[in-house]
Image (cartoon, rainbow, N blue to C red; front, side, top):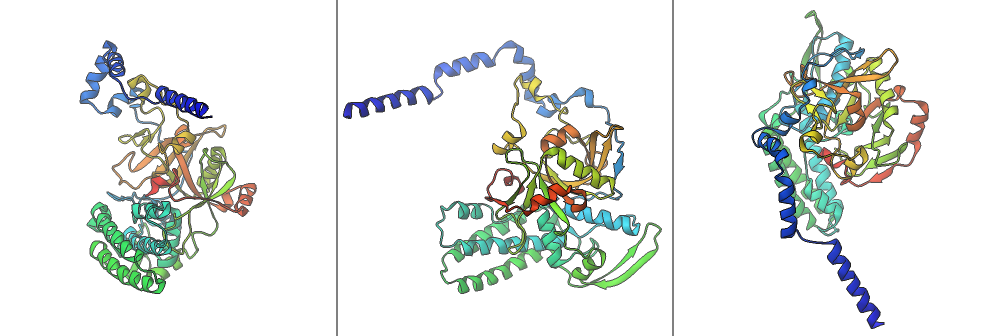
Length: 457
């Protein structure tokens, strides 16, 4: 028996020696000889002094691409989130403002993003601290506690945050609460807020009595609120505002609260009559999923979505745009983006030829390996369709200012849509009945650290 055990141990040792090895001098010599081959000299010289994308750029696509679209949603003006991660908020509000511009024939209109940014950060602070209280009996090494402390707060997010914040706090025009330096440049402010929240968390974890913990949380949130007012201003509770149409004619002038303003011009709960959609080929299609801890408000909605195949999503998007209804849309915008032209095209850059190597991962593998995910939200508002009904390209309203991309817009090929589109928020009337029935399923719960969701914060 001892001999058999000794033999097995030896075999295991031998296998380990074969399958696991350090980088040896011989390997380095082989790598070196392979790397210094003369045919790489020109490429090496070029890369030393030039950006990868400049050298990999597809010269045949330098001419301006076709900017015609068969169907385009009526809207006006380009917004600018500047150096902040609030694309989700700009995207959601841009969908709403397109409706108000069209309905009242306005030359332009913009909601105050900073008003909702303020309340978003306040609610995220409360969500974090309450989650710390809820998990204070767990050790610091617990996966959820670890995740919470690694991600106390951020200015990223998704559509349910827009819907829940507006329902609770209403909305105001941009003229009523203007952007500040720290709403447009959030890094330093978020650093301070993160430091404070982690300090609060360590205090709260020491308190065993829940009533005492809640009392302390309230006191800490009071200080947190004060810091937000110093950086972002004091949110209005009442304001006067006049609406003018394109001709300069006054349509109305009233005194509102943020809640009454939104109630008058929209009124509906944004979570009603909509479907949250995802394209994630790494998981089973036609199933309902929910991401834990993805809500912005403690009592709010997590991202609960239907995972659908890309062809079904494409049809839903086309029907919505044809009916002059824009869609909240998110994607992995950094992949194959030509910033100067404002195009999202898989042929923009030829990395394979430049580096003489292939990049073979499919969409599912890119998701599973954290190589790709939903990194940026925008408004999908145009589509170009061939006479045969085949989608050729899409038009997206971005929030990087009017000088970014193509006059503030991005033009996306349908091939790129297939590979890097992830989320869509659609009205139920554009969703097939058989798809709507899938919403009755019990959702499959995914953890907050799921690869596809990790891009948001």
